[in-house]
Length: 273
Image (cartoon, rainbow, N blue to C red; front, top):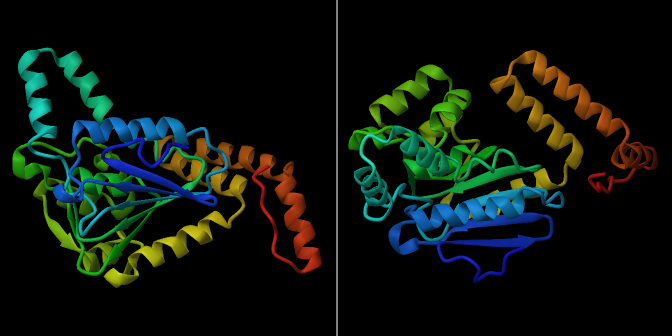
């Protein structure tokens, strides 16, 4: 795993089988710039093959989760690139896909992920939270896909993930109008899984991550893939993945351990194999 000083705009720490990714530009309200995108992508390359990771917590340093794209560094860089290659749509799409994939590795992890969101998460900040399996909000948090206010649209996964989470009609409203909602409304529509007092956010995220990390890893991995397939590929592909995952579970040491632990009246010790 990377050393604490390996990154400039993010931090990654591992405590047991739980990893914590922290956006670390508190003076800029953790606004995302090209360096942060590059570092997030690099962290993804390191974490994707790690089968020992049981849960990832994503949070922000300071009072805000993320203000979105840094308008000075991030958006200016995109505009400069377009100015250098006017009319080159193929290059623009390729560059856009690279940025859009900055944190697309989070849903592809072998473990579940939890976003701990406080203060606000706008634009790309909310899109990062949407890439996680679960979202826990601090009371008073405000979130929104505000890209339309700048004449652009959310292009880092929200158009795929938000309809799946809150339903198409509500997602259209949030994306097309650029509305900002509070934590209570986010909980009501299913965007937030939990809302807790601000001072309890870190503990609540750690407790939730601990519960996820305590689940049988092969079962979690298989179930997540099947759920994703149901949305992206259809029910038949989801069923196929469920059956393949179930076969791996039945053949695993974890299944034998689960049966033995139940017979002995103790908690199972999952090993992910």
